[in-house]
Length: 492
Image 1 (cartoon, rainbow, N blue to C red):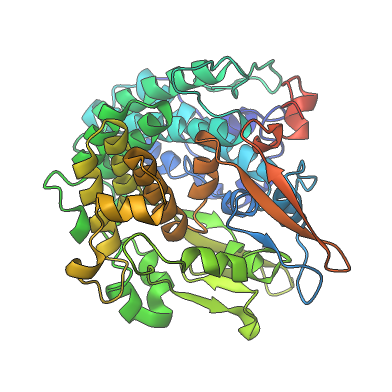
Image 2: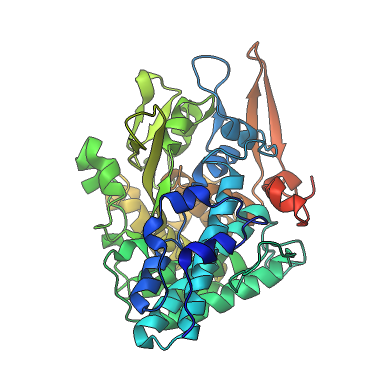
């Protein structure tokens, strides 16, 4: 039987090329120095196959959910500034940088690959195969996030020969190896293969903490998102509908104007609770995003509030819970993810911040299905999903007043094209509902949405920088360490 020591194998995996130093990772994971000789130990390893780094900060700052608040009583954050200005993020050591996210996702991929190898090398039975399925899904998810952030978006029925990201399928037993980025097309082929095989293998899987793993609902939500990016809309509908086979999405999405509103200041904890059906998969990540976005010059302010609290096609705005740091209206803090902190020991003044983030929600799956219905011409079903989504978000919802119809959509968006109007509704709903969840940036890129950022100088004079559809700045730059080791950098 082939035994592996996790401490050694992870340290070898992408040691210099993609991951850099694993010292800090090992310091906080001494319990993982063990042999992969039982399915339970494979399961323990897979706890590390999920993100622990935050992409919300750089993705949200790059999107139109953020604004330059100008000189004043605001903190400065290099990652927030560079992301907002669509510059290559110079800060590489920050916990919220693209560099850190890249390294963290390849760390997760390395764990998944070693789990797969252990199952393939041993007769672990049904449980082992289920863990292999989980590992395949975790590997597919990490690569999909990386290709979505560090490569050009997938072109539906178009050319996908642009550079992808290295797709790693085997554990690395050498510290130095030449990697290739492949193409966006080849990366998507690998993702799809892992996704489908993984979904088949995890059937019947159980976990002690199911919301922090690829449970079956989360896998279906991932498949729905993946096929939305790929433009295979019948599959989006299939997998999104499989999450709640009784089609009772309305009873299982976030009760924003109901229980969450009633929770008041406890809303963030409820929002991120593993006990809620609307959270399909969660992750513990190192993040102080909410505070940084509020307090930083580049982040959430009055403009963000106007977006998320603006009127909707239903005739009334969505209820939104948020606070203002120090009462400053330009320091907006959305009540979504509670922030926790700790000190490594009593002798340090450095605090480590972490939170629980939702990677897949029932709410996103429902909107993905609505978009798929639109693209298949089933406008009636799209309207039903949109109405279900709006009903739980509008305080004092009245079906006679707030029901969304084709006529309302055409009038609200001043168009004669119902498909365009429906798509505008989906994008508007998603931007309002998922602000500060990283989703808006993914939509901006995959749909080529043009946005602009306001820039204020020391005299408060205003200019605007426009991010056009084919702007090369839409793609985050791969880390300098990866480029130095031979990976081609993204063009600028």
